[in-house]
Image (cartoon, rainbow, N blue to C red; front, side):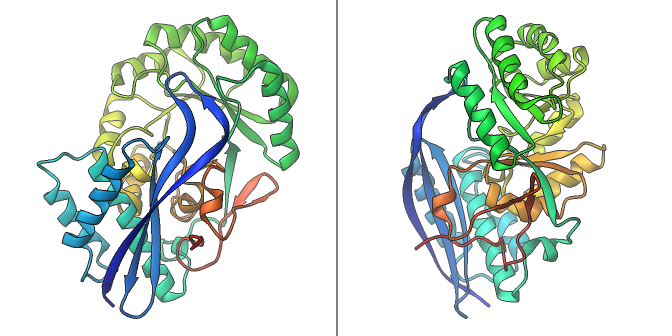
Length: 353
């Protein structure tokens, strides 16, 4: 079995409305869909994305350059060797950003091809642990939304069957964030899970002040309270609060997560499939977290994260984001508030032509 061709397609997906967090202003997501084709007709896919399509051409160019040099002509089963070859080759450019995003999409596409070649879902090939996963609604409750919109959207999430959801915080005035969180908790009641994401808005002292005010709302976690590189700040927040601290989505590869582990920066680690290095590196990173009894929660990439999280013993929530739904022929299935892991071959999701 040999990869004969790697193709890319650029797609821009407009969001239903402009939205914002403490550090993002978003109107669309730009995607590069990556497909590997083999000599026996198997096609495996992966994708990467950028907010508003920023610098999408650079990502596309990196994918195509790495594919030509290290993927075409290889057996997709050799994901470990392909990953290692790319890792060595990009050393002068750097082991973060565009290089790792491109490697990630190629790695996911190769693994998808392997699953499809064997007619098996990847979570079974990886070593399945479960067939359903906890999830939370993450496609709403933005910092840019007024309170009446937050409450209406929270009710819609409940009506859709979600048992947990995430609200963004990071307002200049702590009282504003407290009011917004209170308004959502009033709608969803005491039994639904409520998570809060600060999107790196605060210094540690500010995050602690907010976190203490939010503890009364029984949050599942406070996410990215400080800048991603401020590991000492995350540790200070974690030590000061009863609420769990989650972070890691903006770190690259197992080495980035290992630094967080060593710094004691998180109660929950959140590898992002694009930044972590694809399925190959996601599994290594999850194992590193398991070695110190830390849970992992996947960031974005709902469709493709299901298979690897289903094979991860220390997995917790899969983030549910609907931004990329129109890329796929299939949709994630929500059953009794949990996501069902598909039993279709590969990742279980096929890109629309």
